[in-house]
Length: 108
Image (cartoon, rainbow, N blue to C red; front, side, top):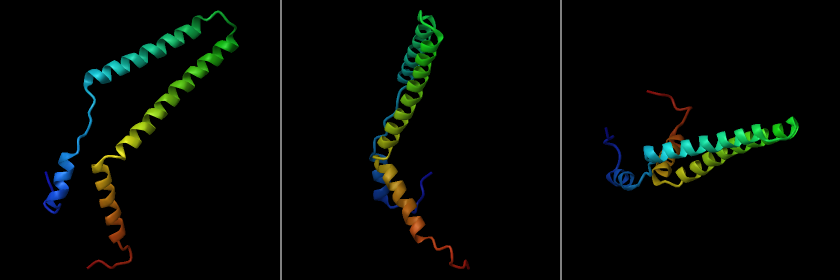
């Protein structure tokens, strides 16, 4: 439901902004590829013919690489989302509301 207080040009700008969406097939392919790669790496580390210390080092490196890949993906996603016009309009609205707010004003 639209709020009637919004100017028409603001609503038009929001509607014209393309929002990229991933398909379910792309999401599934990405999740399967990640799972297979992680599984293959862990199996390779487990069956590597070395002492336990190098094996543990490689396993820990795999875990660190996995978590840092998730962190990098989140940072890239956040940077991309901040570029959208809708996000900037929403931030401008919040900034205006905060600027107009006077906590010391007595309510009627």
